[in-house]
Amino acid sequence: MNKHVIIVGTDGTDASAAAVTWAAGEAQRRRLPLRIVYVFDWDWRQSRFEVGTEFIDAARNLADAVVAAAYDHARQAAPDANISTDTLVGHATPQLLEISHDAELLVLGSRGRGGFTGLLLGSVSRRLATHAACPVVVVPGHTVGDGPVVAGVDDSSAAGEVLAAAFRAAADRGRPLTVVHSYLPPVPIWLTDRMPAAPITYPQQEAADRARLDERLAPLRAKYPDVPVETVLTHFSAAAVLVDASRSAQLVVVGGGAVGAVSRALLGSTVLQLLHHSACPVLIARDVTR
Image (cartoon, rainbow, N blue to C red):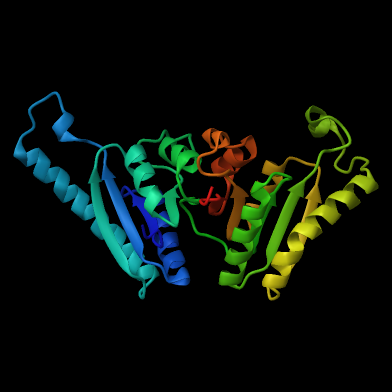
């Protein structure tokens, strides 16, 4: 099975238009084909009511209009990309989950048509970010900045996947990379909001964490010598630091666990907070070989 394709979901909203534009640029940058998919969330074959052909025709015309508009957005953003469109009938989440097995990357807008105004992350995007069989990018519905690529890493095995994806993204874009690692503070987590801005730290702990991080970075620095790297160690909330960094970044990369692992059922609170509040696209890196 050929997985060398980027799939982007569209539903005609501004958020999905931003996702299509981002995905088209990424497809052209990676020299991969782009498949634009619209899932019409109404299967008349399962309806309890008799549906006339005029309604079916109207639904098909709407689907054609949505994918045509998305194609125009993608072509404008990436004139040289190989772009195709597809319309699927059914519920968006299971349909996109199924085709994620055939993708190198799945790109989504942060919100869809069914979201409540106060929610920054739609239920479909959240579900796919958690369960998709490939890496996922969630794109906010506004202009993306031209700053560095930012990677958020912890001490889990997912850090290797995050760093590999982040270095590649920085190299492809010709941008510097900022690596953020949050380590335990010298006081309980629940007290950090009540402490001064610069509480006492343990120099030995920070030195040990920095040494471990530098050891992880060494092979990737050698592989990508032209990527400038800055490391940030903090004992403040990783989510808060990454959200703040997203305001000037053009991409934030975090870990999403291995495909097939029980841990993928729930993304960590850091990732969920980031998806809700990030000012730039968020790439959820995932090891698709496991």
